[in-house]
Image (cartoon, rainbow, N blue to C red):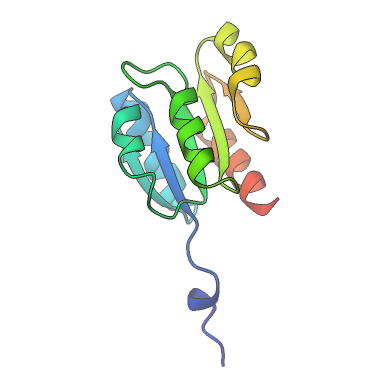
Length: 127
């Protein structure tokens, strides 16, 4: 009998979001969906753990200090196969982010329902 838990480890998500309540809601929703989540309050904190093995970077674009685009560029340079998803409340930033973001990155605009984010993450992880 095979142990599926050993064969398919829980996907690991690095979450960078400067809004405390949204970060908490997102982390809990993703954990309930079966993901392991490391929630970071800003880009610098997320960048400090990029050397760990992540399956997905889920980051806000506009954050004080290091923004999400910068974190994504660093992450993609370290792990070219890393999936990247941006969330932003600034539509103009979302449109411009497509040019600066690593190839294959997905941009979701706020407000977005937690279920929609979880569904998008699940779709991205299955791809």
